[in-house]
Image (tube, rainbow, N blue to C red):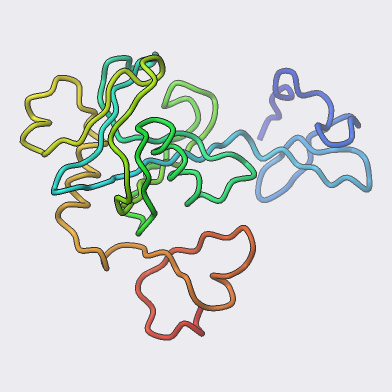
Length: 210
């Protein structure tokens, strides 16, 4: 493998400011810190996105984008998970911020992985869709980032221009499955209760297994 130039604007270690150089790690050469006590290795840019399917009376919560890209289209409420944020709290936060609705994560229903550059940016991205239980609130929006929001049936969505295909697909998956299907949030067992963890899995009969 021929080493490419170091990533633009990344000549020095972001942890300790020592210089970077190419070193073999995990099957390929990667920009690595030269300081003996630092151990920083650049594995590339990546991000985690999340979205929530919130159902009420058989209708799903959608928001209309006010900003580019894809301004005017309708999608599930969601966004990026912060580095210091538990993912279940992140998706509930996004639902509240974008649509003013309080909801609680029930299970994970789908995810999409895209390689860097395929979704309009340099980062590889994992986008996880959760089913959330509706708790309270009526749709509200800021009129800026979010232009509109509401609960819609699949039939109503078919009459709305610009409903994103990935969002409708995730809604159909959720509507056509049961609450005990999919990856369920694990609330018992030693691993499930570790600080900062969000653990999902198929239904386990023995909580000691997790």
